[in-house]
Image 1: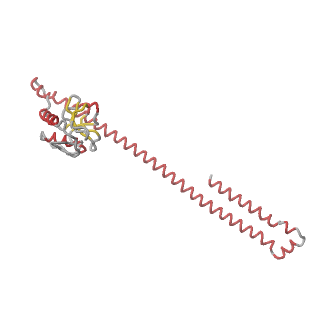
Image 2 (image 1 turned 90 degrees about the vertical axis):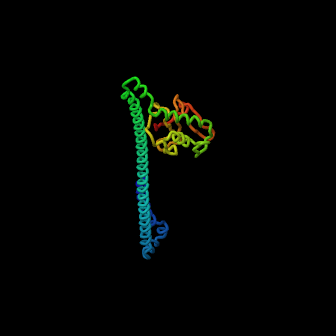
Image 3 (image 1 turned 120 degrees about the horizontal axis):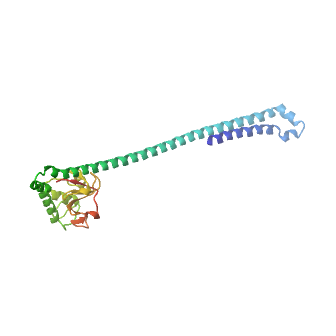
Length: 261
């Protein structure tokens, strides 16, 4: 549409310039006196006026053509920029979709691994229990004594204040408490909740066992950790306004969990 408008302007300018030339040649002042046309012709003025008008028309046409060319180039650049913006937006949207799909696939894989680990743990006692006595022994986890010691240590810390960066014995932060608890039974785990979330075997939060580490946040990026102690409860060092305490799991459900013992 812009190009059509410019072409129309050029045609209009040419029409005006063509109409101006006869008008200037037929000036009423030249015909007022009978001898005036002859005199002007004799001096060459009658030939000068049409030539000047023609030059002006050519200059106007050239200027309009130059303006039309500049406007065309500007329009082409604007169209190219708009196309580039649309392509970039489409690529960004596609990247977001791929990232969301990858995150969903990773979450599904973790859940499947946790369910498989839970089924494997549940089947192990059945495969090894051949007598009632053996069945009774197999029913109790091999690390039950360590789990009991772990939970006993954690409960001994109840009421101690939360202090960021503290690792005991007088105060703790969340990962400082869990690290100290596992150290009390001879198990070394990393210092921070982020690193602690990368160890052990992932387990489903619906199949927790006492002693499992529970996390809020993703693997490698967890921002809080506690220990499941059974009976639908967990123990943690939550924040500066809350000392080491026991909470109901249903009140603040974790995102996922790992089994270290």
